[in-house]
Length: 267
Image (cartoon, rainbow, N blue to C red; front, side, top):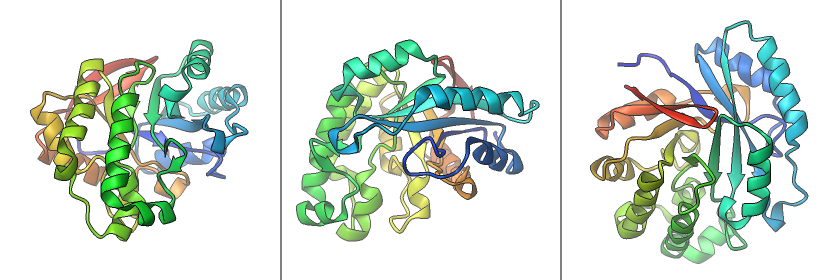
C-alpha cells in the first residue's frame, strides 16, 4: 500500500491566468513535501469569453525544460495541459497536440454554452437540477472525443454550488453520470480525483465518493490524483484524503502517464 502521495497531476503556475506562482516554486513545494512526481497543467482556454488566450506554450516548454535541468533527480516533472471544452475546438486542440509532446492532457468543462460553471449568480438563479443536468449532458458529449487522457474535476459545479444549494445528491443524475463514466471506460479516459474542493466551503472531493463507487462497479480502473493547486502551499493538499476515498471505494489502481502512455500502478 502506498504510504506517501505518489504524484500530483493537476497543478498550475503563472503560465495560467489564475496563478502568479513560478514553475520553480511549485516544484520546490512538491520536493519539500516529499512528492516524487508532479505534472504542470496550464489552462489552455479557447472559449470566446476567455480570449485572448493566455497560455503561451512555446515559452512554457522552455521554462519546463529549464526547470527539469535543475531538479537534480529530486523530482519527476511531467508536462501536462488542461484544455477547456476540447470538443468545441477540435482543430485548435489537434494543432497544439500535434506540435508539442505532452505527457498527458486533461479535458475539463468550465462552460456549458456561454454559462460559466463558477458563476455564483448563475448557480443560484438556475438551481442544482438545471445546472447539473445540463453539465452532465455536455460532459457526455465531451467524453466522446478522443483528444484527451484525463477527465478533469468530474462534478466541478458542486465546488461553488453546494454552499448555495445546501445539498448535492449524485443519485438524482445517475443515468447521466453513468453515461459519462461509460464513455470514459470505453475510451480509456482516466478520472482526475481532484482534491481542490476539500479546501473550499463545499468540502467536496471530485468526483463524489458515490461516483467513484459506480465507476468501480462498472469496471473502471484509471484514476489520477490532482490537488488543482495554483499556489505552492496547495501542492498535494488533501491528496492523502483522496487516496483514502479511492481505497474505500474499492478501486485498486492509480494511473501514471509518460508521453501519453498510461500505466496502471497498484495501490
